[in-house]
Picture 1 (cartoon, rainbow, N blue to C red):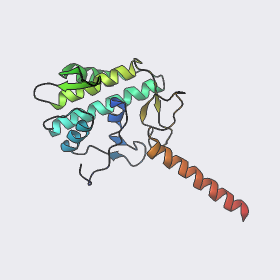
Picture 2: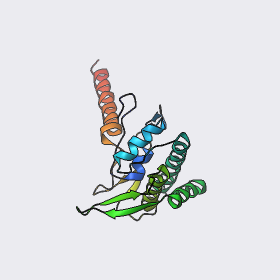
Picture 3: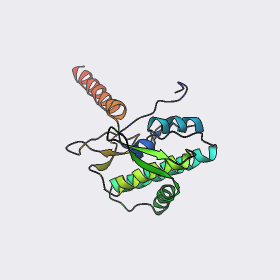
Length: 191
């Protein structure tokens, strides 16, 4: 992967990890798939290798990403799902041609259509989003506590009380800010 692009923020849930390809949505947004080749890279990391990606396909991917983010955010706050987002997720799911396969190690992998098209990979991501948003998986949708992030993430912790989409970024940044604020407060009190 090219060092000229920001690192991917990888997670264990495909759909919410995909929404993380645009981070810091309420601050200085970071686009992690700015060019078609970068989407190819991200898909490969998740076992959804595609032959190529056009600018139009990148647009479809971004539309799906934003639809998943909108629907997951609504689900996390127990609000009505946006109709346009639901339509986009359903359309991408229906248009993909992928099959779940079982590996000899007992793991599920995806086999894309014969041409390994981006649309097939997006269908897999959309299907994953449907299972998460519909509540079919053990966990809960939550929103990152970072005021600049607010990403939807899937909390599978035992207590279901996780606060951050990613402890290594948002969590550490918030803890560091609290630590420095506390130190400033204690030095001001000492003066």
